[in-house]
Image 1: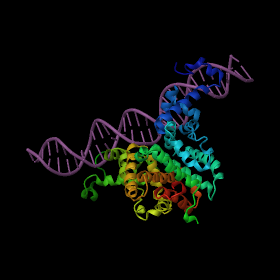
Image 2: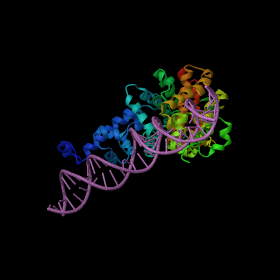
Image 3: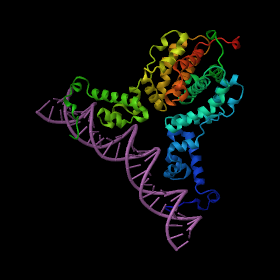
Image 4: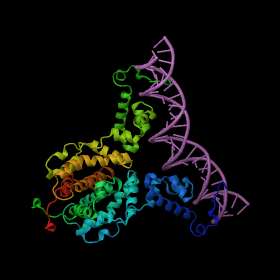
Length: 203
Length: 203
DNA sequence: CCGCCGAGTCAACATCGTTGACCCATGGGT
DNA sequence: ACCCATGGGTCAACGATGTTGACTCGGCGG
């Protein structure tokens, strides 16, 4: 059988849903799995196609490019979800604790994949958009003091720095440290960016 | 002239120095220029070789790999130099001010190239080594309080987060902000990680 | 019954980092 | 004087990458 729609001819999924959706989701599932497992660069289009049992060209045909497939597949939010909803005074520690939680190994995978893909323009723009939507928009209006948007952006930068050192660089000092100390120290540093404590200098 | 050592046969540089050193430095110069201009991924071995007027295979033959060439070529220190030498109480602001200085566009280029190359193992290890040597070693012994090494590592993480948002992500909020505000806000946040000010909680 | 269209496949392209075979000039040993 | 080992250098090729164009089916509306 050199051509044509191979084996899944009588598949029920093909009959019920609009044609091609089954393979589309198969590609998406394979992409999600391989991007998480091997990162953006490590997961080749050909490997994703093979995992989905599909021709590599079809992947591009459906999604336009590897970058677009990545954007449609990987959740850039890192599942922050409801962490920001609690009291403003402890959000710094809560954020660090969330990312340090060993029960969430997926976060590490997603961040590595995201960082590898970050120098593609569309991914970069999506990250900026995501930062604005997920962090700045809900947090900035609640902040006291001047330059609230800037301070949220800087807090996000600081958070990203920790993830960078922890997940990409895998710095031995931070990795070996007790999580509670990191949460307290770094969380408070972020916290002071959001709700600064008055010092003598401010008088 | 299909083979042999082409045109530079009578070049004095070839005669004076050990053979091959002239082309070696030519490759290094081309690599420095192209890595800075186009980043690690953007600068291909072939382009570097062409810029140096040399066969691509020779580049690998001399340096082993593109990664090794990068490590021997690009200064990973970002020229921190004497910034850490001044008084400990203002080192946070000084660090931020150093990286924000528009008179140092090279820093941006080097950081982008470094970040792109960071997921190669040797480069990653070099960055860890460099952090330990340039930041932790000179700074940690001067810090008061507990966990000095960890706190320096976290300060480096925080600094990296700013560079990330600024140079890679090119976040519009931070980019548009007045440098003095960023220096003061973020610099003080780093400062509090290094020389924390006592709060009520610590009583 | 015809033609169209979307799903799918195949082969190919350009580019990448890297490798092996080869060449040539030089220099030291005999 | 010869020889050959050595090392700088070139060339062609390998395998892998993302992506594209030509092609072929099956099913559907006219």
